[in-house]
Length: 212
Image (cartoon, rainbow, N blue to C red; front, side, top):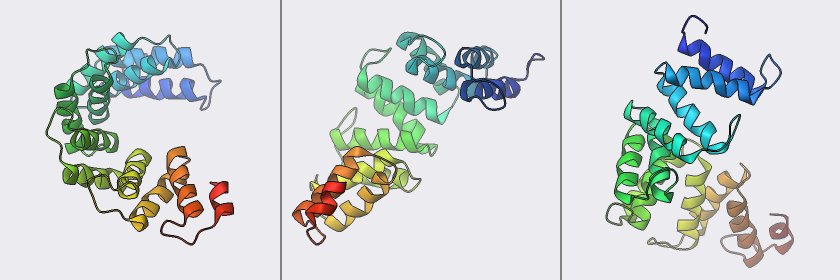
């Protein structure tokens, strides 16, 4: 790392951040990620943006986070592109801009990033920066959900449970909600609980529903 290897800098950053082989020191981890980012590593730029957003090893700084996120996104980092799309959606560190949100989410999704695919699906679902297209939203959600991304699994569950521009299907709702619920997603767990309480697609079992 001292010789300028960005891979080594990233490894040290991870070691100190998560306490792997060393005593955890988030501040030291941040410094190594920062060195990697400043040396031009797009992985370092993306991770630095994450840490600045989370306040991990450093004080939260949305403006600086957005700046590093943009650098990584412009360097082709798929996760950073999706993250930048999210920042434009909510107006964190940048001025809210749904057209930019759609553009960056689409770039991320095309590269296969699950979070980016979820972001793109949300754009199509609600008409953010593009025309509403429920079919395209479901298409991207399925791609993302199949990788195990819980937000997409939960959204699919909601779409089929609440019949959001699609025919209601309790079996599909239960299928996707179960996958997200197993990862600890509270909203998906609520859907499963309600299905048991009211007997939606399953035999009514209020006691089982209460457990969820």
